[in-house]
Structure formats: structure tokens, C-alpha cells
Amino acid sequence: MYQQSDWYDSQPLLESAAIAGDETAQYYLAEAIRLSNRYTTDEARKWYEAAAQQGNLYAMLRLSSKSDICNEMKSCGGKSADEWREQAIQLAQERAKNNDTEAMTVLFITKQGFSWLEMAAEAGDHLAQNTLAGIYEDGEGWFIVPGSREKTIQKWYKASAEGGYPKAMYFYANYLFEHGGRKEEVAYWLKKSAEGGYVSAVGNYALSVAHIPNDLDYPKNLIEAYGLAYLLSKFEGGGTAAEDGERMLPKITEKMTKEDIKQGLLFAEEWKKTRPPLSYFVPVYGY
Image (cartoon, rainbow, N blue to C red; front, side, top):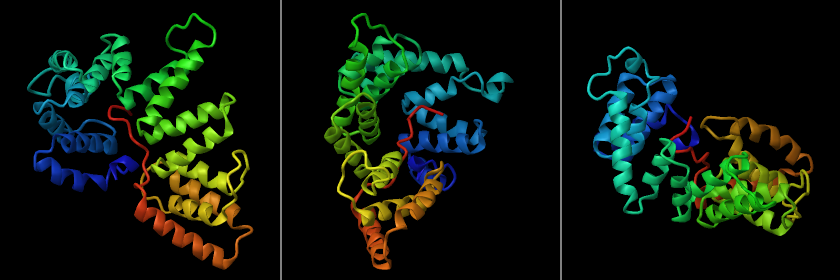
């Protein structure tokens, strides 16, 4: 539910695990509280501190934010924002020596050097690989040899996709499509991303198999397209997924019979049972 950007209904479930001492749940509960309130409340801070005390680097980074109301008013109590940042960097440096790629990423986030993100990507961290590809695609970094930027972007999106990250599969498919990649490869990775549950891929794949438009030469399958659009229309998380699904359904049903629609609903049920839940793959340290 958290990965579907449901910052409210995910809280009771996360809280059960957080109370039991789960560090990751403590961090995500704090995130859900912060995002639902649009600032770090005392309750959110309590859970960030609980996760930080167990060594969660991202919780330390949240506590190091000087934009929090209590930091601005110097009423947080305990460690200061600077102290939390210093602790996060020191601990990350220690862990990075042991090839901890999350620690390397934290060192990049805390502006200890761009090379840390590159090291994390080289060490096989699929989140770091996807992030690095996106940064290069946005024009950051230096490339002297013509065409090397494009090759490097493609390299890291592909590495992340092959590492099993559905969001990168979608970005890789999109990058190939926009840069003249083979249609078969684009179609393969778009479908893989949809099967992995990435919301944007599910919508685009549904339209593609409905031939709206027929850019990737999938066999036309209105039943499959309807089932996926229906799943999106029933999405209860945040964002625009449900609205997107509702807009897609009338376009898909134009040439469908009642029996086709019935089969589409059965397809949706089977997909839901056998595939991962729909997800935005929310970044660990984002928003």
C-alpha cells in the first residue's frame, strides 16, 4: 500500500511492524506520516529516530533536514540536524568500505562525491544503476567522445532492468523506443515491466496490445487490454492510475462484446492472483 502511494491506509499496517521493532517499517511509517501531513510531525520524528537508532541511514538523513519546523525553531531535542548528518556520513563511510551499496548511495546523496553513485552502480545495485542512467539522461556528467553519453545511459538502464527492477525495465524500453532501438526489444521490456507491476508500464502495455496505437506489433488482444485497464481503474492508491484506467476502458470496449468483457474481468482476476501488486516503486529517499 505504501508503494502505491497510499500514505494513509498503509500507516496502521506499517505501525504493527514498527512497534514490533522492524527498522524498515519504522522508516516507511515515518515517511507515510510525513507525506500525509506534508511536514515532519512529532509522530513521524519519533519513528525516524527509532529507525535511526537501529542504523537506518535514510532516517538519519530525514532527521538532518534543517527545513523541519522543530529544527528551525531549535525545539527538536536530542541530536541536532548537523549531528544526525555527521553520524549518517560517518556510518555510511564505514559501511561503504565493506561494499555496502546503499551506504555508497547515501554518500552520493550527502554530496560526498558523484563517484559514490558510480561505485554503487558498478557494484550491481539496480537502484543506483537506474538513478545513474536518469542523471546522465538529464544531461549531468561529462562525456568527451560523441555518442558515449547515449551508450552509457543505455548500459545502466539495461543493467538495472536485467537486475529485475521493473521501473528500470520501463525506462529502458522507453529509451530504446525514443532512440531507434529494436521494436522487439522495446516490446519485451515493456511487457516485463508490466508483469512486474509498474503502474505506468501496465497502462502503456494495455494500450499497446489494444493497438491504441499499434507501435510495437503485439498481437491484438482486447481481452487482455480490458483486464489491465480495469485493474488500473480499481487502483486505490495515490496518483492518477485509477483515472487513467477509467479513461482507457471506453476506448478499448468499442469493439468488444459482452462476453469479451466478461473474459476481460476474468483475466484481471487471474493477473491479480499471479502477478505482483501494482506499484509506483516509490524511491526510498524521494519526494
